Length: 194
Ligand SMILES: [Zn+2]
Image (tube, rainbow, N blue to C red):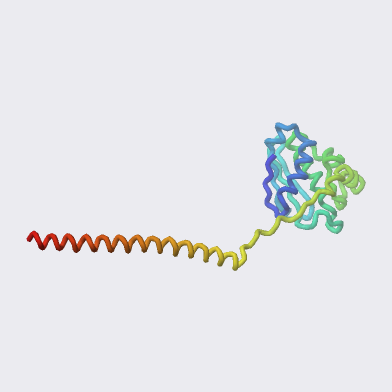
């Protein structure tokens, strides 16, 4: 199973939830091949998805709001049933009517009026009750090097470079002195012969 994560939610957290669902929906061979893309829902605050029937790829779109917050409909449940729904399409299930009105593949959002309404949504939530305990946190912000750290690194590099060039200079000075000596010796001998 491959996760392509285009959201700011932690990939490990998405993977933990998705793995559990994929184990229930797919046999190991298919599970290994499947790729699940996570992106943000552009025009809605619902969890949505799409998949190719019998394919190895599906897409799940998630809101940016807190997935465990009642105010935002606890959309973590909806994430679970949507992932299951799209994976089920990859597995070969088709027929939106029965899928959406089923406990296992129906939306868990209580705001959706159709497909069995609130009652069916609550059954879906009960079916995926484990997912509420799963964390889904934002990725850690990238660790910024402090200005001090950067300067200390630069200082260490410059000190090293100075040491190297001092050694080179010492060697060059020795060579210059040696060849100066040779040159004057050669010149002296030439004047003796001519
Ligand atoms: Zn569908």
